[in-house]
Image (cartoon, rainbow, N blue to C red; front, side):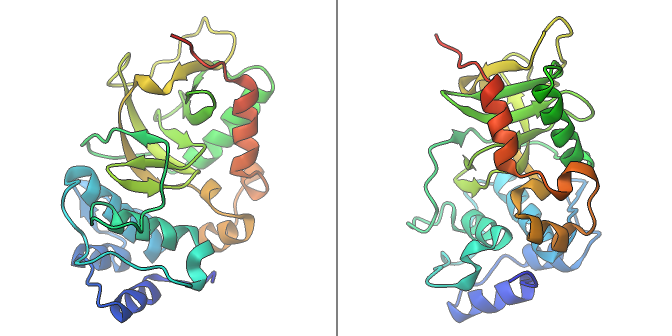
Length: 255
């Protein structure tokens, strides 16, 4: 199913008489599409459709982006991360039981969304620094386990280490988010006096918005197909590896 594209997705929806918001198609097939003044970037049509759907849900959580929920049935794309993510965003708020349950709910926040396209490599570098005991410029956010890894270099974006839900939409591990924390609502500024990664309780998250799926959300075969030749650790590192590194460094915060 590597070649599964938005046209295939539309055809599947059509079989169920599900009509999608036309803005998804516009974003999928127009690489210069914008929303809220920001580009709907993505390496292929499915990724651009996901990014548009997520933005529509970010700014209007109650607005439906399809006329009916999508039934997965026995579809072979059940293992396709992009297709499942798009289904879960579309089904959110449609009063159905098709949305995959998630125990990790984050409050949504309306905001203009931007993210460095080099974030994928930055997160692998951050994980390696944590492993080497030098991960001072990052935060590991969770409850009794790490759920999010927030980097301090470049744009302070965040990598989900587990399934999370924002505005009813479910996003897989490997999603890139922007966070607002109670302690620093505008921008994360690393504290240079820390000797290790800073552990933060998930209750500190005031709001979150989905940016895009990173290469880490996909298995190695899908990753190469969607993103092309990748550099460095992204050729082999898995999201489970980063989650395990974070687990070793994370200290649950007790109240």
